Image (cartoon, rainbow, N blue to C red; front, side, top):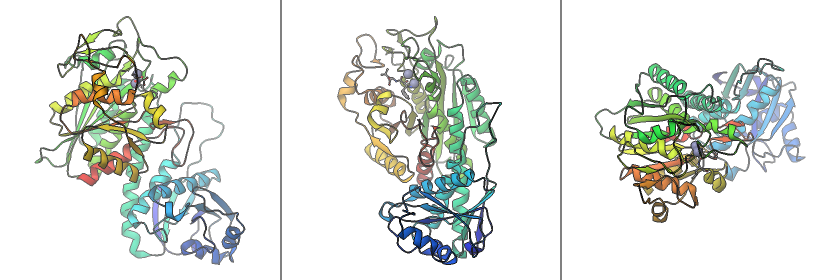
Length: 497
Ligand code: BES
Ligand code: ZN
Ligand code: ZN
């Protein structure tokens, strides 16, 4: 889908679908919608007053065009209540409209920039959100079926249209930014949706290396066993697939000692290991590398966006499988940090691989750490798919990330890291246990485990178990992988740099 900007009158623009908008409770359409309404002899106003157009967020009302408007069809998309209106509403509305465009097989869709007029949003931010919502909204995982009922319709062009020439430059910037960010997020979705037999640790590592190469980023692929990453190896040794640890570095401020590490859990399949998971929905565990996918997606944006800061992406990649070679519950294993770990439950494997990846990041000079992981089912129980759980050791850092997440439409909610959770991980025979005896408060318990390996470095842990993939499409999120939290990470990094 090409994206263009046109300066001119929307009623005179020839396209298959013209997208305009309406807020809840508006009796007489204004702005660009008002111009179309006048050209249609007041039809939109009448439909609104009759209650056929409600303005509810994401509602799409289709009109066949009439003389006075050159577009073949018109979609009026609801923006919701004006008091709730924000950039995420723009994304949601844009996704609803573009999906309608796909449904009617439009080749060219023209849209006004929701929010840049009456909505009062910054023109660049609004254009960025329109493009993000549109590209994220039409995402579909291609899949592998040889027999398809119908090929998926592809919209050829999306045109952002405005009569105000003064906004063109801001729109250009917003469009470019929105496009690359949304494409990176879609790429992360592709990785997560790919089945585990195709997305093995080696394949993931090759892909990461390729992405690093085309972006001219320094990349190393490490053999965890040789490098003394015993906790990572303890998870990997039950599998026939070789584990990898990939590190990709972006230096946007080489003179600075500051370095942000992004560490992403990359379990390409989590069977639970010897502590085998129940078979129901086990297939979903192909998504257990969503943290690594989000980190890779974020790293892929840095050489384009050029933030003035240093970022190290660390991807511990392995399967978690049961076999005669697998780690047993009760085993004690070492780790890169030197701490020994009593493995009570082999299904608590994410924290094991993150422990070594975090230690590695510190050895490479990380001064701040964000880890991203589908860590616990307990986080899904607590927050569902509404929000990512956040735990950390530095309140200011945590607050900043939560704020950025909210602005990006990727809600985050802090969970506690009380001393009780650390106490419950004390082992009689090793430095730490990988789970508590009770299994209670698993998101916080997982956080407490990671905290031991993080030490004093400012750190935030994002548990995306509930938000990385969803069962049912909503707004600009498709069924399956969501790409969370690529937008938050990149927004955080670019605002810092
Ligand atoms: N990958 C799972 C967590 C998960 C569950 C992600 C559901 C997405 C959806 C993780 O490795 C796991 O199995 N965690 C255990 C931890 C427990 C043994 C302390 C869990 O949550 O049950
Ligand atoms: Zn597990
Ligand atoms: Zn897991």
